[in-house]
Figure 1 (tube, rainbow, N blue to C red):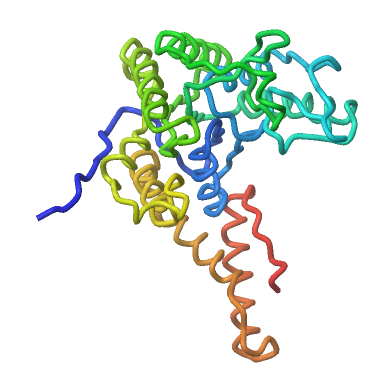
Figure 2 (figure 1 turned 180 degrees about the horizontal axis):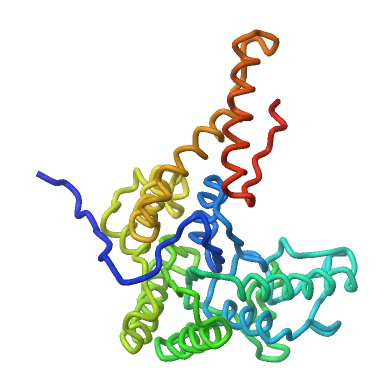
Length: 322
């Protein structure tokens, strides 16, 4: 007897991810979680060039500015407590001077455009329907950067507005690179600071808006049920961190395995085992670094690294542990 409702992802007709794939991940924290796994297993990927972006309009803005090379100018950055920031980017993209930040932002747009040109897969995770408008110009921001809340007003995007944004993203991406697979997910992380009811409304708007577009584009745009897996398959607080909001390591591993099973080519499994063995080997700490056994261990590990890099030259293992 099963004491869980196991969610099985339906097989779809899409191009599977392998070690030749070029992957871009954008959006909320789930994109970062999957990106960390891709990084560990040495896939070619780029994660959130502008940092975490929570709502669809922020992601749409990033894609438009990257693809159309709409560079940032001095009026689009601001200074607070000696640090320059941009309302379109996460706080980790900052500088002590406006000029340096503008260079960073615009170089990131250029690099992102190049990545999108080559991308075989783009995975976009939507986190919330709640958005903040600046009172000064009524523009929606991606991040408030702890600017006092009285400088913003808060509102929720309705499903129709989300559909417009998702469809615009999809069309922009496909016109720019017709060969990429476009995958959307909804973040399994609950935004309880908005309120319990408000979070449920937010996720419902995202799911409704997304599926309106997916139904209009069967076989062209895909949905991965990360949110549904967390809410229904893993519906127990033992799968959460102490804050009872974020999935813990066990949950993230389960979500990754589900994502891997649905999206990755079966032939990647053997290579992933080889990479995993190397990564674990790099973490090994010997009792005696001068022993014959450890010298042989190092030699064997270096051989495994060389063998992998000969087949996949993008792989980059750190060997500082040696």
